[in-house]
Length: 580
Image 1 (cartoon, rainbow, N blue to C red):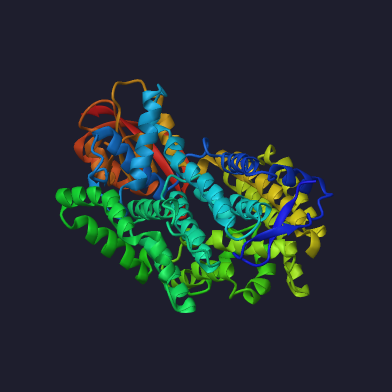
Image 2: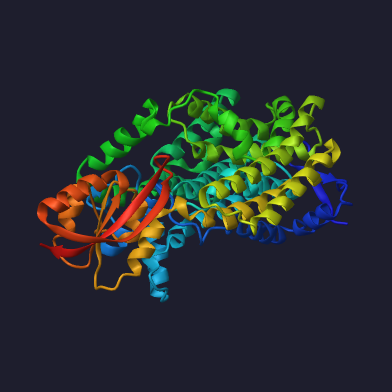
């Protein structure tokens, strides 16, 4: 039987221990998959693909953030300008250039390999997020090895791999999955150095590997989302300095060399964008985006406590275990490893709770710390008090509730029962039920593995089957499909009443966004032109068309739902027949 190791305490080294009860088939398979580092890496990579690929290729662009990022990247590829960031003619200076470069590199590579219409395939823009999500899972494993056994590290990584929030971000072409990767890399490198210092190890020549990873990750995080990564790192260092009454260990991170390397990596683009746009980027990104979040930007304001409430859904299926582990983690709070992880988690969580603007993905970079703390408590089998065990029912509740909502929503929106999803979602509920019924403090790993399978099936059913079938939620894709079927050379379009970024991405950068009257004027300016007019703008379109003597017909009408505005829409595609 494979020998495992168990830490005496968080971050205090490892010692041989008796293997855990592994008679259950899932545990036997898991123990085999994690019996060596290479097997664990392969296992976690395959898990990432299984969890994140359903729906990855088939879900159309999501409004609004994903479509905005993808369209800005598309314009970079079209123009060859990889410094400026624009959405049509408007500058887009809310975030630095990192994610756009990664997406553009993916699209350019696919085009060079001969993939047709690469610039219009949204899944290509999602590839960096997929890579970031799988990389984050693997880096969680690497970071956790500083605190717990290999088996515990694999459990922590599997908690991240299966969590609902990371599954969503892995399928969206935006910054957060890649930012998570950089945060874990930086925090993991710092953890290895900090725990080495705590153990009293005083190498004459500190290794360069951890500082290199740390400062490179900081540079990557800054290029992806500005100074946010510095908050996670800075608050952790500050809290540890207060608790330990010293921060001398941080000199092992070689800060002088590291800051120089960081500036070498980030300054060229910042200088280039300043040369191009002056201080517009800094005023928009810092003043217009970051600081405005303190005042509930874009109507996403919420009171403190929202993230704690959302945690039970967004970190599922790891959330029940995390709740049961909380008392044990608190008792171990002054142990070196637990102290570091809590310094990573608690101060930044408080900041996010206090900031008025709240979006679920903001706290994602804190979830690896929770996963590792939970894995540590899981290893030592000090999970729960009796009243906390009731949380095991949550393993069944989430797949049951999500399945009912998904099927009922599909029937309401499409009037189709999506039968292919039923057996998958039923299996998810069965495994969730097993996780609940079979839960015991001494065999919590078995329950979690059942819950992880439930999460995998839930992702396959919802992302892989239900969401792609909800065509009414993606009117831009239906409009683009209708325009591709027209018989004329170089079709051009103008949209009135429906200006979502996905429409620009799907129909072309030169799509004109106007009102009903402007759409009529646009239609009268030439042949092979189409006016995409939402029902609420049709009256103005008709009135202006009559005024200018425009003759037109309705090529088709597309009924759908604008998820950004939360309302039903109907888009008529008008084509000119000339003027009288």
